[in-house]
Image (tube, rainbow, N blue to C red; front, side, top):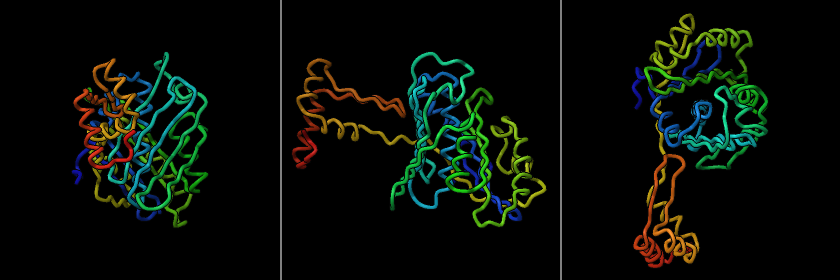
Length: 297
């Protein structure tokens, strides 16, 4: 269980009892650092991944079931792909692919070019949902606010922040959303928006959740729920890499071994490299044959 007084890698949900508005606050350092350290990303790409990470974490908190959300930006710009995957346990991972020169002040459209956001909701039980969202808005927050307005018909605001605090990279953010019970008023929501607009990066990166919420909303009745830890989790393994190898034609694998001396697999999410020599590959195929694995080619 997350420490309710922690400011690192934790998600807090809260409810304004008299205003029919709910909120979320997520604060991350290590989880964000693990994602941006897997490659040498330019600063604007790190920022984009941080905002996508915060957004995905806030959206997974809205899940009422076991499952995952994947948010994927793709386009024809220098960043062809940026993707974050998170589940209801707040286990997250992400990666970006980029090429060419990227200006230090590059924004969303400079990075992605002509493109879109794909939101995939994948419950463990039930049907998979995928929505394609146009990049209408100057920022990722504006794109997502439009998505909620159009698809959920729920007034929603997001604050997505990245930066450094005490020499470490941080990503944090907040979400406000009208409750679907229909009792909230536009005036209530606008009042809370104005209060939340005053939040500073340093506060998001350093203040404990209860202190930050009191600083913003000390005149409101705020019910804060049990915090949830957020952690980087890749899921790759040598076993999974081996399973991938045996799905490739044996002739192709042994050709690689004869020229390279080993078969190398690289995980883009965490940067781990897996290497298999001829003895390893022989053992993989032998084990698969013993099990009668029909995926062996």
